[in-house]
Length: 158
Image 1 (tube, rainbow, N blue to C red):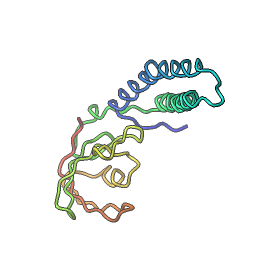
Image 2 (cartoon, one colour):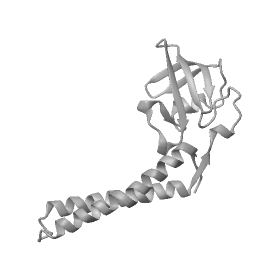
Image 3 (cartoon, rainbow, N blue to C red):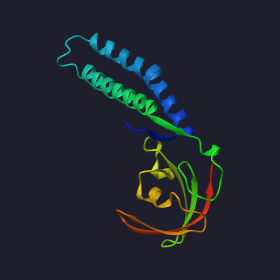
């Protein structure tokens, strides 16, 4: 299996999420199952079935995070010298030429992306178009929603 890129911050957040799932949510779900089981007939007990379904989803999420952490290649962008070049983990300020506005993106791994907050996966067309480029470069990126024209204003490793 290939290594999955993950920022240092992403690793910390995933470990916290895993800890919460294992030591907070898992016991709560077990308690809910025990309480529902105490109500008697399990065949028609909606609370029991809902708790069991939640348990399955939670265990799947725990397994997914454990596998991701086991296969992660953790990259601390602060260890990479800033040269004005966009790399994994960079925070990039771009000027959207078509819409006359500035946008800030942070390029991260799939598991830590949050596009609504400008944290985009390395697998997205925008991140692929930015990586390897430098400050003052003008780039055209083809996305599913059309072409985007950006000028890179700033690249930071924070």
